[in-house]
Amino acid sequence: MANIRIVTDSAASLSQSSIRNHDIKIIDLPIIINGKLYGSVKNISSDKFLHLLSNCSSSPALGGADVSELANLYDELGSDGSQIISIHLSSTLSPTYYTAQDAAKISSSDVTVVDSMATSGGLAYQVTKAAECIKRGRTVKEILTKLSHTRTKTRTFFSVSDNNQLISKNIISKLRGAIESKLKTSYIFQFVDNNFDLITRSQAGCCIEDFWNEQLLKMHDENIVKLTVLHAGEEKWASLIKKMLEKEFPFVPIEVRITKPEMASYMGLRSTGLTYLLG
Image (cartoon, rainbow, N blue to C red; front, side, top):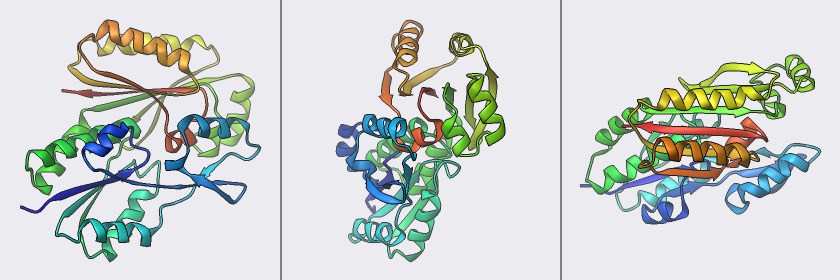
């Protein structure tokens, strides 16, 4: 049986130990400020990126993956006959999925490209599932079925208090965003069906706390097996949510991480996300 290798984006909310243990190859992306190359995602901490997002007069942007470099990576990984599963951040959030499709077409290796249709937490769940399946000797076809199942069992919610990036990414219009910025509007989104779904917006900051309280009540009767809290400068909410989750789900592993640059460039500063997996 052919060996199977995994390639994914730097956006995946994976620990370094998990990346090493499963020999996962990570695609790097350039960071651009004022049209000039500043560095790359792999060589900058999430904290540092948030600092740039907060302090640069021109918000840092992420460049695209290079088709030729990615094709070369596929060729290298498949040179021994290995098959490759390349799993990527939602195509709504990043063009890397389409870049990977182009790279797969010119690569001599057997590459299957997957749109996770998920944010960084959900992407990590799918990559981890693929790695587990490979250890069990599953075929690519079997793994794809498992990834699809994992996708349907993933839930993701965000609260956002700073709408600068929402405006920049056209999630809300410039005119409405300018007005709501002055009104200090907060937003609650669910990421579902490969897109952002606005649940509510409010000028009262308490809407965020009310939402998380209500959401955890809804989760009470769900069979949850994984929990991931991601934040971009909102440690207060992340800590509060973690404490609430620990009380409600004492036997479920909970990860708390700073948002990766790919997601921070969408959700912006002062955002908090919760991703969880149903059994």
